[in-house]
Image 1 (cartoon, rainbow, N blue to C red):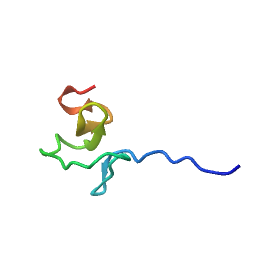
Image 2 (tube, rainbow, N blue to C red):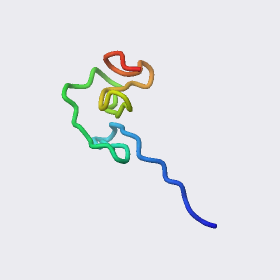
Image 3 (tube, rainbow, N blue to C red):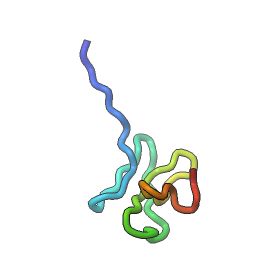
Amino acid sequence: MSGCIVAPARGYGGGGEYVAPAGVVYVAPTYASPGPGWAWEYHAQYGWGWHHPQYGWHRGWH
């Protein structure tokens, strides 16, 4: 038996490219990045928003 498992692409902002998770429509940012290190990502409950690896979601999303 052969096959492969492919994980859906995770939303991210890097190098000027944005990738939407499988089955999710990309929505462009509606406001500027809060600062260095923030990436435009998809949140399963709230939709698209700014996320920082250390500080979490902008505007207090969990």
